[in-house]
Length: 103
Image (cartoon, rainbow, N blue to C red; front, side, top):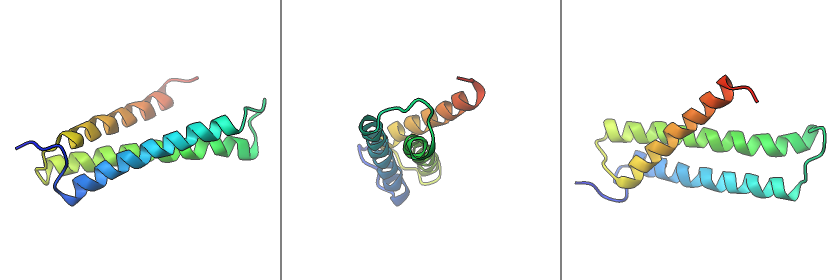
């Protein structure tokens, strides 16, 4: 039977990690709005932009892995868990795009 919310502990952790990553990206957006871009990005200005983005993409990828483990190993079938898996896989696509395609 497919439910909306996951029943296993691992599935609930995966859903929580997706919510945390959304909050981190929202925080990164507002930090970027508070501190305008200096011409050469140096020091604290660079860290304000890099650290939340890195933390957000890391939590998205960890969420994707935990949701895949929850679906395959624990046999948890929840709609939000499948959505979490798709978001996690998109996180890995973003990392591959950043590594393979230069700006």
